[in-house]
Image (cartoon, rainbow, N blue to C red):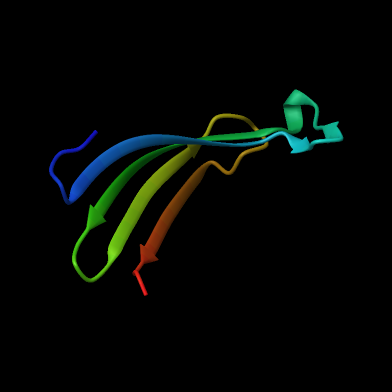
Length: 71
C-alpha cells in the first residue's frame, strides 16, 4: 500500500518447501510472514521489516534490512 510516493507498507511471505525434486515434509517446511516498510529517497532505498515464523521449523522472529542504491 502506497502511503506516499516515497513510502510504502506491505506484507510479505517467505517459504522453504525444500528442493524441487524432493519437497520437505510439512513439519520441516519453513513459512514466515513479514510486515515491511519501503522508503525511497534520492540517495538510497531502504526496506526494513520484522517477520514471524508460522511453523515450528521457522525462525521465531527475524529482522530484515535491505539498502539499495542505483549505480
